[in-house]
Image 1 (cartoon, rainbow, N blue to C red):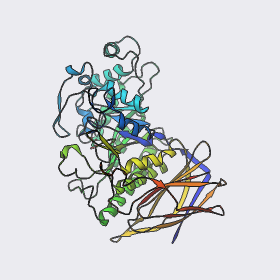
Image 2: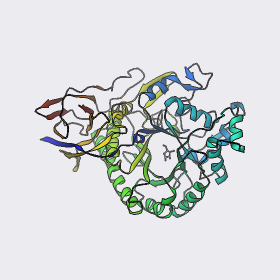
Image 3: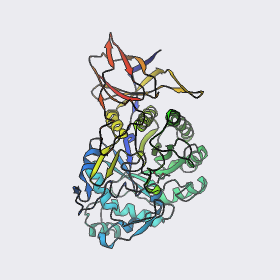
Image 4: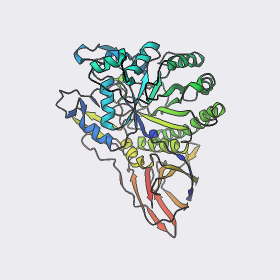
Length: 492
Ligand code: AHR
């Protein structure tokens, strides 16, 4: 069967906020330390302690925003421990993540330097679980106050004369779990209180993000919107793709076709989650003023054998590429409400874009999807209508294809397609209304083996290639998508 896809280029919808391509870096395992921060004295080439190879690779992705310092770590983090001369910084135990000693060498100043190097917006998550209102309030003052104040003076003593610009500020993380095990009613009140004292100094304007629901906890969203909706700019949602179960996770490598199917099915579940959380938000905020901020998503497998289980280090295969492509398509298609997402995490943790080992670095299949899809950032979302073939496995049916489309300021149209099937190719005929096509090109990410991945010895096993499977015939595009493939087509 030939699938039929119609794209209405004359029916632009909302803008796809580039922040959907946001990232997350936590003090967890080897994400910050080793992955990003090696210190000024490291033999690994670095700029002010941040490794040059990783920065160069990440800069290519046009990263819009980076969330830090956690995660669960955020609700144990005391920012005053991470400023001033490094030798005097307090050492603490990172109880959530492996029980290792955190020397606080990467703190507020280093984070802003990282964002400067990446040319991205900082998104800081404050501590509600074990921190005080005063501590959070003073952090905002330290970072953004322009004038004479105790915190501004302290910042200046520590070498930063001018305040930084800070827009995105999270008031706690997973406050239903590691961030305090709270009930939504209690957290809603705490949110209202803590956010009151995060001030807008000078012309700095905070975009305040409330800690949102875990997966399908719709009651959390209901209570937060009802009790605190008018005090927030964004409400978060966390949902990971976990084959097996939370208690019995699976390996990132060595999976079979059943696990491939289960992973795809669970990725597609994000569509239902957003639809249902958005419907609740619509009830309290029909103008869609409050953004849905999916500030943690991605695959979660068992840690690689021989690594610290608390470090959440996993390999990243073609399967992760499909998970990324499916999620980004879903986020685009809900971008009237979804204003930011942050994949977990940037380097060496969970569905990482980059893996490092000593001075070596590799780009994962997920990295390549972000690179291929970045053309959608800040474009107009286009209406698509797709009759997808079915993908059946073990008596369960899901759609075989995932799609989204957008148009940039110059009128170029981008179509991103995932063929989710592990074994079946897909033929697709694409009608595009509203533009006269003169040229078509594309990129594809695929491999003959579902578990294909990049290693330090073979870093280019899974890498994008020119897509030859598309042709233009009398204004209609015909596409042949191999199984397990991610494709982005450019139409001019
Ligand atoms: O990303 C890893 C952890 O997952 C985060 O610290 C936490 O917020 C979530 O449970």
